[in-house]
Length: 502
Image (cartoon, rainbow, N blue to C red; front, side, top):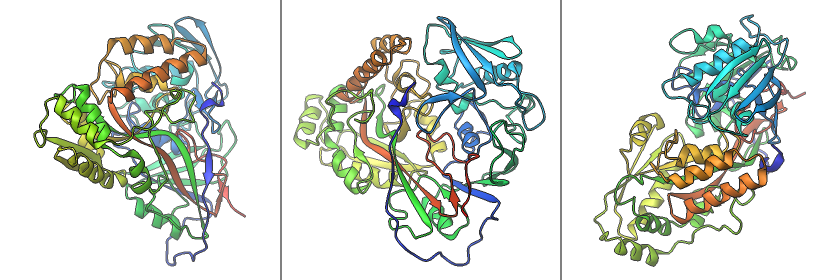
């Protein structure tokens, strides 16, 4: 990989204000992070719980995506494609888990095989994509694939391929306490509230500057904003535009372009959403430019498809769809959908505070073309089972196309492949599957990216999903902390480089 998908950081202005009094502050040798999501599946690594452990500076993978967007060595120091369907990884020597067990090929193969055998393996590393993991010698692991793939070194950079000590994987659910290799080790979990960590003095990359760290799970964005202002936490992530519009002098707000798009996923397996005319009518009713300016207050861009213009796999000349109420009404009429006859529910989730406002805007815009939409906003965990089972009309989703695997081919396969592990749209087109299979085996990046651009154009043209805005991440950081950087894929936050300001 190159820096092709490294994303721009932009620091927005600071305004002077007084520090709010009376807050409980962390000790100077402790850094506290407030995060939007906590573990929801008992630390099952095949779920997004794995991201909690990498953000906490606890768990590491064979490779890592660095802050500049390039792939770098992690727990593997080298890798090579030893055969068209085989990749060999050399395990870093001299590394120990914080329970004292040495890192070796057996431990790595055991951890990766564990996640492959889970009932619902992760989107980027599952038996459809990975045939198996085997030990070649004590310091070499081989990963085989059903067909040639150039993405394996990127697949093992995803948090769901994190390596925990073998002892952590013996129970019904993984137990990350004192089982990691990173700069911090988890020492205590406060269920649904926090994860407490201590410095790993034997960390192979050098000891962290902070002796202790804590990750607090705070889904309410306004609460996170208050906590960072008062000094109760030093870092608060995923700030909505409504929070910290004018940050006080003790806070830096960092805004970063993300490989993330908010979309309205349509259930294409359910009539009439299997009719492209109905989907295009919904797409034409939505004014993405107005939404970016109002709901996101200019801190997002109207979507031109799944990929933003700055990305090398975006279709050339792509542009946001312009709202056209007359065209939308005509498309519905052509499809035989009479005004008021289409029941339509929009789902959104509470963890993203902007979802409720966004859903209300969509409800009003769809009303202009005769679709009487209802809105239901709940916790994501409550919505996901029905959505995965196809028991829904539409769902708003904020989705990164590089988080699972830092190549958009994995996202396209997972979200729009016939057997995709996260195909919420229930979309299936065998020709697209064949195109993506060929693309993910293509070693030449330019050809691979061209195939992704073609797929993106089709998804936009056929309104498989309604892509609404390309997002930015806003993180709030106390001036008492230095060394913080926003990771382009949100893999890492509590790093060894964080330290108290002088």
